[in-house]
Length: 153
Image (tube, rainbow, N blue to C red):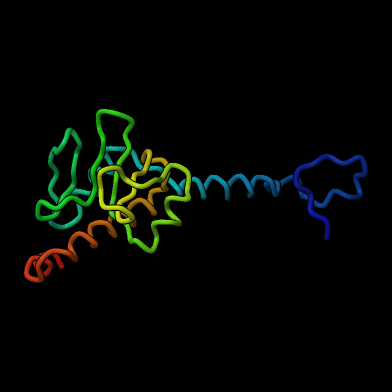
């Protein structure tokens, strides 16, 4: 079976596509468009809304940075006045793999191998960003007393 990807051929016998149907390249573009929709990039307002939607989250300003906290313990810190970079807590086992990626590095002035700085919101897609933020919150929450943890379980 020979596929015609919308290319014109000199030999009409090779044409296997019915012109009344969408061309195979149409389906490729449709697939590619659906992939870009599923890998959407979050903007700062939707990022803020997501962080505040997590149980027990408060926001505040510290060191001229916007911080999202649980019980006054930071799990996301954003540099709002500069390049839009932000830092989150990460699993030390994932640290090397994360910092090997473009746009991710060790967070300055934070616990070594436990915090990463992400250059901007477009470094991670929407799904991974939400997952990393939720993991950061969970790691910070795990360090709080059991009674406090039970409040947000």
